[in-house]
Each structure stands twice: as structure tokens, then as C-alpha cells.
Amino acid sequence: MKMSGGVEWALHCCVVLTASNTPVPAAKLAELHDVSSSYLAKQLQSLARAGLIHSVQGKSGGYVLTRAPESVTLLDVVRAVDGPGPTFVCTEIRQRGPFATPADACTTPCPVARAMWAAEDAWRQALAAVTIADLARDVDANSGPEALVGIQTWLTSGAS
Amino acid sequence: MKMSGGVEWALHCCVVLTASNTPVPAAKLAELHDVSSSYLAKQLQSLARAGLIHSVQGKSGGYVLTRAPESVTLLDVVRAVDGPGPTFVCTEIRQRGPFATPADACTTPCPVARAMWAAEDAWRQALAAVTIADLARDVDANSGPEALVGIQTWLTSGAS
DNA sequence: TATACTCGGACACAATGAGTCCGAGTAGCG
DNA sequence: CGCTACTCGGACTCATTGTGTCCGAGTATA
Image (cartoon, rainbow over the protein chains, first blue to last red):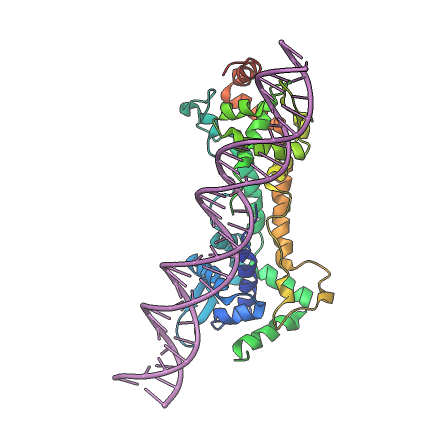
């Protein structure tokens, strides 16, 4: 099992978007992270479809965060990019084979699925406890406060 | 992101193996769950490679649990079948692009990766808290205690 | 000793993710 | 008011991984 690599890109983009109030084109974000702009566009589209970012068209268009950074959790981003479905899918194999339990007795989900889903819930809860604002703060603490403002000026200015 | 479907099969097989002290052939397990025996063999091989089950060759061979059911966690099975690697891989994109942070400053992992890995740890911890014995007990409680003993007799007897 | 049954790894096929491309639409500028 | 240039959006193709299958090596049994 491996998570889509686009999640990492999307998260970094969200952190960067924190530093800008004006729309940022996808090409700029791609150049900033040195990744394929065509592919990054796909992830940004997923974020836009989920309503996390808003797309502005036209000459000076781009993407802006719709909500405040404190109210966007990592779970939101992961669900938007990687899909909302559960990672573990129960195929109800207990209802198959010679010892199949009748469908009437399957009011509660299979114990195996219950345990797996409980673990997933723990994972989701941990993701929901962290917001984009938290990440931006950590980046500030790690790379120094001047990093994000430097990026901001680079984004707004037309530099290549 | 979707977990390998073989994990479900492997878990159910481990629960079934709880009920038998004698080796159980892969074909029997496949017929019991009504799944492809050839593919199930692959999952069982993964479990054997991880040391969770022991393979006995020869005419009346098969698979047996190596450890006690109480000391085999769901995390062990998941890691064996689905791979031990982390689901989120950090490509260190902070070290790329015009604002790349120098490698010297990257003593601690990227904040994004830290948060994602923390969530994964919560997931693993939840999986490690449940054992195969717990699952077997839950199945007993759900399907009635006669289910597993019935399966046991069916496994040991040569019935098709 | 021959046999029949077991596992084990090597071999194809399909689905999903990764990556790319061009067209529709819109804001700015002459 | 029209044009242009820039933006996003979805449709297409390729690579990788998971799914499924097969036959050969090895061993306990009769």
C-alpha cells in the first residue's frame, strides 16, 4: 500500500498558499517546487473540486485558499487528493464458502473489518487534528520566518 | 490509496488457523473462503516469509501458526502481506526549486512528513493493539461458538 | 522405492496511478 | 468595444503495481 505522491505536493502547495492573498498560478507553484506543472495541475483540480481552494480564471488568475488555514485539516487534503474511500474494503467473505454465515446474521460488520476500520479512524483522527496553519507555523520555526515572506514576494513579483 | 485485498484473506485465514493444531493445506483454506487457491497461496507465502506461519511439506502438510494467537497482532499480518514500508513517502521537495532549503538545515524531517508519519504511527498502534486471538473471540461472539469447532472438524476431516 | 500430495517461486494480465497535452473560458489592455 | 494573452479544465497515453495463474522442487506416506 502506498499513498499517492500527489498528496505531498498538495500539502506543500497549501502551505505556500497560506503566504499569499492574491491568486497564485499553478505554473508558479510547480516552478517553486520543481515538479511537473501539468501533473500538479491535476492535484490542484482535485483540491478545487473538494472546495478547499478556489480557482480564479483570466490573465492574473490562479488559486487561493477558500477557508482560513486554521480550518483546513490534513484529512481534508488527503481525502480530496487521494480519494475519500476507506483503504480497507470488506468483501464479506464470511458470506461465502461452505460455512457461509447467512446474511440475516450479518447485522454488524465482520470483526476483521471492524478492527481495520477502527485503526483507520485513529489515522483519520490524527490527520484531522493538524491544520495547514500548524504546518505553516512549523515551517516557520524550522526554516526561519524570513523564508515564507521571501516566497511571498517571489510569488507576487513576476520573477521567473 | 487502497489496501491490498489479500490482507483480508490473510486475516481470515489466521483466524481459521486458530482453530486447528494440525497443518491445514492452502487448498482447504481457499475452498473454505471460496477464493482462488492460487492467489491465496501467494498471501500465505508472504505470511510464511514473515515467520507468522510455518509451512509443513509432504503428503499431510499445510500451514500452522508459529506463535500463539495472542502474540500475533494485526500489524504483523498487514506488514507481512502489504509490505512494511510507510504509506507516505517524503521526496524532500523542500530541497528543490529556487527556494530550496540547504541540506545542512534538514536535520529534522519536513514538518509535512512529520505530521503524516505521526498519523501513520497512530494507525499502526491501533493495529498492534488487536491480536488474532481477539478476532477469534469476536467471531465466536458473533457467529456462535459452534461455528469455529464446526470448521475445525471440517478442516481435519477429509470432506470436500 | 514409488507415489501422491504439499509448498515455492516464476510467469501473464488488468487496474490504478503518473505524467502529458490541447481546448474552453475569462480578465486585462489597446 | 475587440483583441490578446494568460488562466484553468478535462481528455488522452504510458508506467507501475496489484491480481491472478501456472508448473516445477521437495517431502512424508504407503
